[in-house]
Length: 401
Ligand SMILES: *Cc1c(COP(=O)(O)O)cnc(C)c1O
Image (cartoon, rainbow, N blue to C red; front, side, top):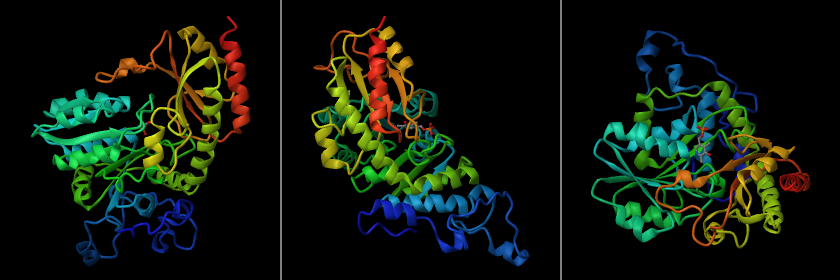
């Protein structure tokens, strides 16, 4: 298995990881191995075959060097990981991790500000299997601690929270889970292990939607689950039972994205911070929800626990109607209107988080006011000055009824 990272050198690791000579041959990147059938030399070879580990040819569903190279690279980027499993989407990765850990009768604690499709799994996937989900406020640690019972076997964290960007004390929440005998999983899509080495910070299982930052070019869907030795075997068993596999073409694209991940994240983070600072000075803006921004909610925990951020953040308009918000978003020229994020192109979407929370109040006390509506921005690789100019003209269009 992969060596652990000896020092923090994300750009170098992103370039060198996963490129084993036996997989790449004479070329720089692992070729796209398309194949369901691997041929054996003779019957004796066949009889010797069926090695159980990854990294050996057996049958297409078990992957080829194209997928192994990507999984291996992700393992090298996640300190403490024993291995990484690749899923056809981020949602499939979350479902795969939950099914790998939880059994009938178990209770899952799920953070209330979780990605919406993860929340939906409580009802559509877990409840029919006899697995109960209880939501908790990740900012209320005593209530979280009190929520554990004998049947609590896992917690699902996400930080910053989806849409509303709260940063929680992941090391403490993970420590409590461990003390109570529950596995801690985190949806680490926002920071990636470059920004938040989740296993090193105490989590057992680190999940990512590779569709976002790792792919980075809005042209593939994929997810990953990385874990230490304690959980990897069990997760892999469920993964194989579910017949999960990703296409070699998509794996090659994701590997290509990985090479530029650190510089893309660095560029987007810098531009996002510049734009967040500009938004914080605008009268039309009530709150900027950007953990990288000094003074913003969660900034201190972010500074303590994270090594870097990314281009995704939100803000709330001051005293505007849904029609105002729609005019603003519609007037944007450089920002596309669309879900997903982490691509090279900037995106904007409106959100109404109150409908997606059952335990946390949204907006929270101190941030509430009349007609405060949320917009989420994903900052891509355009020049920050151009994005700011685009927002400026869109603000003018918003109030131009
Ligand atoms: C997009 C997203 C996912 C799901 O990823 P897909 O690849 O679209 O299935 C999971 N978690 C977070 C935080 C996301 O933003």
